[in-house]
Length: 117
Image (tube, rainbow, N blue to C red; front, side):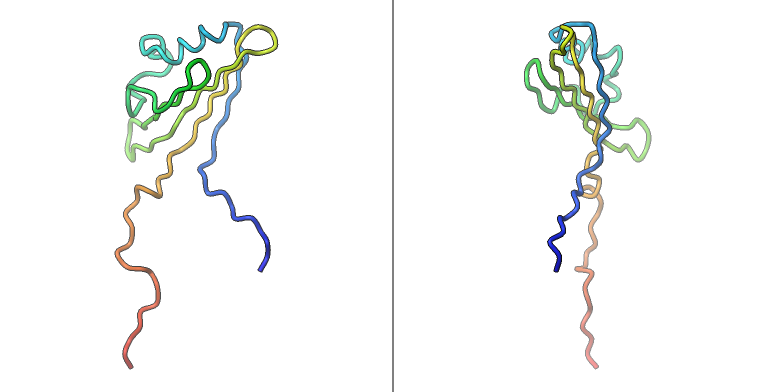
């Protein structure tokens, strides 16, 4: 047997990074106050109106849901930190939810069936 590392089965993520001229507090308000967030991330795209998790001033995570079948879901995380120029660095990380957990499972064990001769 080899000592190979098992592959990571986590869903791949899309990561976007932006440097903005605005201070971190202003960017934080834009991603957390529903009336401001609605302008660029409509509530109709969210699976729920409230964030799934939040670290005040640093990170907020929402759950998104496609508007058309099969209504796949993903998480989008906004990470906010000051940058070197006095503005804000924003990382937007979108990762698909694990659909395998939602799929119906087979009723059998998918192993060999013993038969009498």
